[in-house]
Image (cartoon, rainbow, N blue to C red; front, side):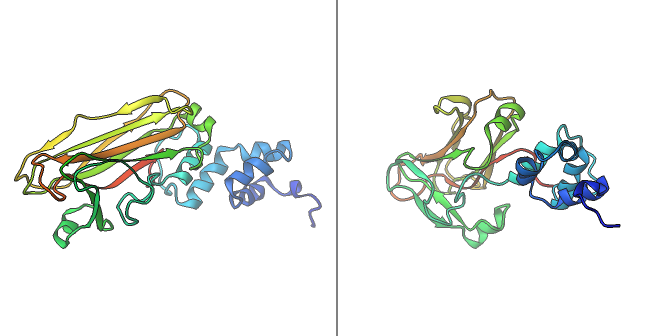
Length: 255
């Protein structure tokens, strides 16, 4: 029998149709149409289906989720918010705040270094000099898709990671500072570990530093990330700490 009104379709078919509509269109255009559509679009079942269809969860997913709709959006937005973290584009997107000594430089990971680095996709790094070198990036959360209500109400975890290494022949000091900023760029949260001093003739292994911001105050609109360092022997050239593969991610990671 022909259906004259789409709302005469079984709810299971409407749910399946909604599963294929982009999430933002569902909320902005479909949800206001009528009470039936609103109620269906608000169902947990729909957002679990969309998560499964997008590969955000697996069939055997058994972890608790407080809000499947928010979970879906956080998963869909999940990516590294720092641009050019591995120096593939030179210093594009980075502000060179302090450029001492022989200044910042980009170098290639050697074959042996690539074997030692945990991510085989990383091929380059930034390296510092004999006077302090610091560079930074500011992440605009709204521009990256994280709307104000999401950040103020859900306040998803914000995870920061960075990788650094010394040279085996020269001591160095590495530093990192990350701040959560308000719309007026006032600090609402800060992660600033003590500078890491690596002695001369160290193992020169790559080290990871990480931190997760949780339960931070409402009002976070930007994230400021700054790192760098200096060699401790003041040798001309590029003997300070090397940095690469920096990242800022928000919300639960992909399975």
